[in-house]
Image (cartoon, rainbow, N blue to C red):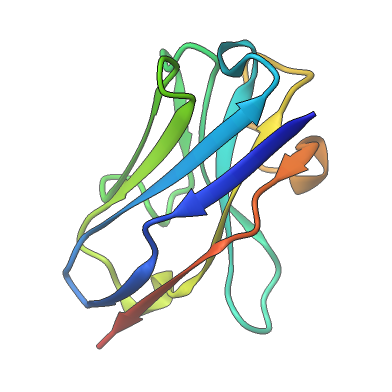
Length: 126
């Protein structure tokens, strides 16, 4: 079992920055891949960024490449999403998720992730 709790969301103006955190508990954090997804109102959940078990490999959606950075601190059981140059179209609920069956990660398919956090709202005003 893995429990995931996101934090760090909020309201920010376009061009601003936020850092999301996802604290994990339960199974040994350094043994599985992590990912961030987001879901805007009326839209499907979409892949944002992923990271492998060690932090040595990262993956990004084209829409956030160059603006967002995913990282993890295995000593703190936490994965982060640093977001810069935010745009109104980044407005969504952001979810972290774990794939405890896979160390590599990077999949954009939400069904491959077996544990999810409750989500944190990010709102970017124009």
